[in-house]
Each structure stands twice: as structure tokens, then as C-alpha cells.
Image (cartoon, rainbow, N blue to C red):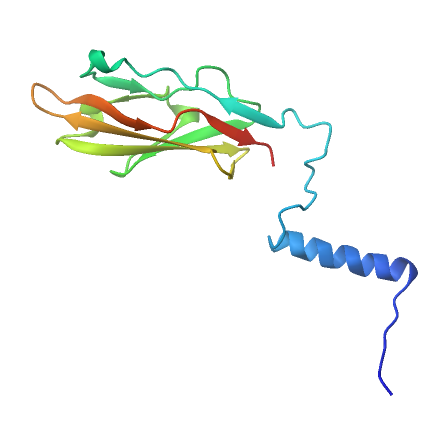
Length: 158
């Protein structure tokens, strides 16, 4: 004789809800309802454009501006980091990085701009900006070029 457990009614639904909740909590599914269908969300997706860097003929320059060209969506902030160990937080920084304040040798510097919603990192394709620049010190420390810029980002509300 085999043992069979038959669930029905509200107990089956409660069990199914518990399993789904555990799958969502553990991050094993991407389609969990975490309020993303909530009509009270202030925004769904937002494309963030940035202040233009100087034209290539304008280099070298002392300062680069990593600021968005318009206000960020409600609750969104960003952190700018470089591969030399510097970090800037949008809550306490005007978006501008001056070469002489942070670099003392010729270098290629990679900046990463990461966006957060109320402290939670926004993830997904195209949600981070990466900029590669060259720093030159001959005649004073300045940014000598922007070598690569991934451009605008698309933020998706979780």
C-alpha cells in the first residue's frame, strides 16, 4: 500500500503560497510579485541621460561632469566609483570630478556609475554606466580624453 497525501481546499492554497514565497525569497524565480504591479509606484522604467562630456577637440580638461542631465526618478541615487579606489555618492557630491584632486600619474581610469532605489542596487542590463578616460600629467594633471562611454542607462523599477 502506498501513502498518498491529498491536499485540498485552503490547506493546498496555503501550501502553494508558502512554496512560492520561499522561491521568491531565495531569489530562485524572476517573476515574483514584489509590488511591481502596484499602481502607486511613482515610475516603472526611466532612461537616464547625462550631461555631455566636452567635445574631443576640447581636451585636455580639468574636470568631468558625471551628472544626469535631468532629475533622477523619485528615490533614486547613484554612486560613482573608479578603479583607483575613489568613491563619490550623489547625495554629497555635485557630479564633478577634478583630475588634479584624485590622480597624480598618467593613467587610464574606469568609472562606474551604479544606481540605487532607496538604498537597493538597481540591477539589469543597461542599469550601470561605465566611462573610461585617460589622465595626463604633463603640463598639469588633466583628463586628456574620454576613451569609452556606455552612455544612457535604463532603470527598471523593481
